[in-house]
Image 1 (spheres, rainbow, N blue to C red):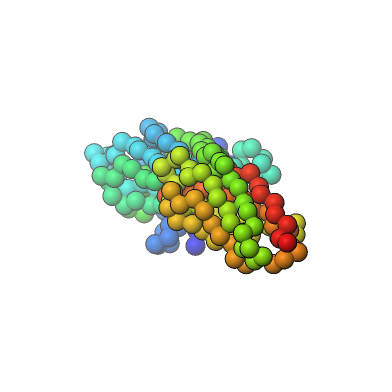
Image 2 (image 1 turned 90 degrees about the vertical axis):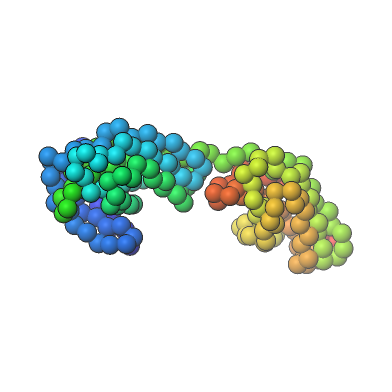
Length: 226
């Protein structure tokens, strides 16, 4: 479990730093004399943010902690929900990738250094936004092939990051539900054999990347089963 606290970013460095990572629960005491990490490079993908920093081996540091805040428009602009996402107890480490993030979302990060049971003030505050969904599947069509069968076809997505397709369906105007998935970028058809006569079906396809990113939904196809 990750512990979160609501505190102003401008006041973080003046407070004791409490947090946990997935492996251990550790409470560090603030030591304002420890070196801060202010030179961090960040690159955002669709569902991840990658970091690189200059290791502080010659400073006698045991490692670093990485904090993430999700921007929340319902809170005052100076207040964030602070979560320690990782502690790396290796002074030679200089890279980290934070994964499983939401696409097209804003995040704020900051780093601390660790020595024994002490933790530095927070370093540079990094605001970054993950990439938006990539282009939708094109040439999406559907046909009723038999009383209980609808066939869907589409053009294979041109983006080589695609590993599969999600087939979603709405029946009689109800909410979208996952019907099935189709593996392989070049596989471009799906046959729905759970059709009931008299129902109205609306379909859409969403391409899924290897990093679990997703495309915009395709255009919709509406078919009244007869």
